[in-house]
Image (cartoon, rainbow, N blue to C red; front, side, top):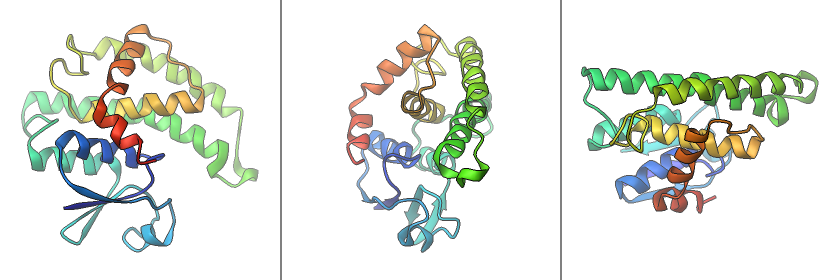
Length: 196
């Protein structure tokens, strides 16, 4: 059984959602970032952490790809062109969506107040909007980013879309909004978020 450490109001939600999609049993320790429970297995104090046979894996993207590879779902085989496209989409989502939202969070409530630059959020919202147009141009014809099959970047992007709503980053592309509405209705995601 896997153990997931981290609260569902963080990137831990991505890991909980993946495990729900895989239909696997897991234990969940809803510990906050930098808490004693987290630092015991990840000295940086960051969440999520996945415990596998006594070993700790950190970083939500690494955990998602590990689970996808291990269980042969939500991924394409390594060394294929489809996997290269999948990895490219993953990096695009992390660079263009996750990074903007994380930077905004840091300048809203994470950094010490004297190091916050609140005005940066206007620039980040502008970048977020511009990135949506580039995303829509890369989306496949099916219901998921790559077409008919749900893959790792779908979990990351959907989580970023939910995060954007909380951070008041507008979704300006109708196709992206429709995608988020469909993905947000998945029962597996609802179960994962209910752990928050």
